[in-house]
Image (tube, rainbow, N blue to C red):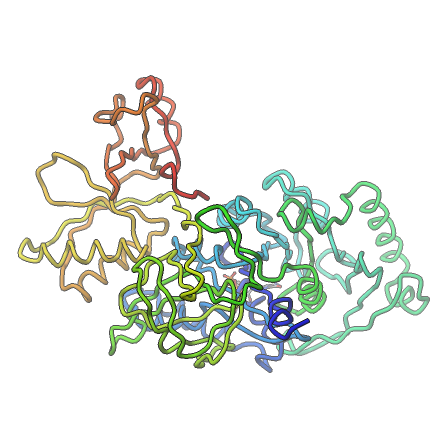
Amino acid sequence: MSEFLNKITKRRTFAIISHPDAGKTTLTEKLLLYGGAIHLAGSVKARKSNKHAVSDWMEIEKQRGISVTSSVLQFDYTGYRVNILDTPGHQDFSEDTYRTLMAADSAVMLIDAAKGVEPQTKKLFWVCHRRELPIFTFVNKLDRHGRTPFDLMDELEKVLGIHAYPINWPIGIEGQYIGVYDRLKKQIELFEDDNSHGSKVLKSTTGSLDDPAIKEAIGEENYHNLCNDIELLDLAGDEFDIAKVNNGKLTPMFFGSAMTNFGVRAFLEKFLELSPQPQPRLLQDGGLLEPSNPEFSAFIFKIQANMNPAHRDRIAFMRICSGMFDRGMSVFHQQSNKLVKLSQPQQFLAQERTIVEKAYPGDIIGVFDPGVFGIGDTICSDKLKIQFEDFPVFPPEIFARVQPKDSMKRKQFVKGITQLAQEGAIQVFEQRDIGIESYIIGVVGVLQLEVLEYRLLNEYSAPLLMNQLPFTVARWVYRDDGKPVQEVKGLDNGLLVFDKKNRPVILVNNEWSLNWILERNPGFNFTQIPTGAAGI
Ligand code: G4P
């Protein structure tokens, strides 16, 4: 195999999806610890508590510094190059969180054993599921009381509709598990007592199920229960089928504790073995581009503005899809139809930014953006001139009416709103015939509204008046007869607005109102995203 193909085969690019507090930061850090990128766990956590201390988001530069370094973390493990994409959670949940998933080849769904599937996990799961992304499940916090493994398998099936294949199974009693059984290897791993509180790699011994020493170490009752569980799983559970894993129909399931490191190595090794290498990408014309294509291509999935306040810079993060990136190369930017030089390419090794010399399919690099790039843009070699499929539009859930505080600053206000919409930071709607100059802004996370206010003031000197609106649901409206929608009846507690392409959209308080409105407008149809746009 050529060196180039070998690099592709050994790359794993994934995102961790979870609800806040399930342990994403802790698990990420432990993966770095096992990957040798850090030698003592605790540092990421410390960064994170700093972040929480900065509860006031107006200390925006600090906050950005953190989200930048954690945009992607990279480390090497047993010949693999691992790229973990950060999916912002907590209050900074936004379209960025969803878009990051477009750059991943698989996802790790992290679940708190006591809480099961939580709302944010569900939202992120659906985005992955619709893309048929392989999803690996890690059930965390097994060091304390939670639901039983069987219960959690059941919940995945009932709530998310996905079958699970437990790859490892915890041994012992709930909250005091002593090891795991690997169902594929048919091997037992028993953890040694450790007093490092998870700051160091956990030592363990391995052996087969019928090894007398292992049997003795487990104890008779635990051994008996384990054998029963395995039998039940083998008889009543799904069979392992990698094809089903690859199209997101079956999730390999792992149990462990990111805090105590229990099950972390077993998960990491199996995940690297089973998860897909960089996958072909869909093109606008319906074709596929293979990562092994020698010509360079990438798409932009995130733009971070003003990472360095002194320079007012913007960094565009791109995911490489084919060919090789070489520092200083000029590439074709499809959307502006121009050749651009990718300057100051950066990669993120553990917590440090480094200049990239070479990068391969699956890798993420950040480049300086002179203001030409947009989310979803295609960058490729001059010879290739392809365009990747459009980025999905995500339905906004939070809405606000904004207008300039100072009418003299109208121009800056419009410029700021237009640029931020282009950047993908907000979706903009207009209400017609109301006589005041205002826009309706739609976002996925509430923090985006604060960011909007702050950035308009600081980057465009345009202070805002902002009123959050009570709507939570947006639907694009169409008529069966193809005529334009001028009026929608029964919209008593809602609003008819128009998106930037002049398509009508209704905003309402809840999904229940939609039927009421449909009944009063025969021949009307609603879609969650504009038709023609790729949806989640
Ligand atoms: P997040 O990024 O998903 O939001 O979660 P994070 O890793 O910050 O973890 C949230 C809380 O859960 C933290 O506790 C963390 O220590 C704890 N945690 C993570 N993994 C495990 C685990 O395997 N077992 C147990 N028992 N707890 C776990 P905290 O009290 O908020 O912070 P700290 O005081 O521990 O730092």
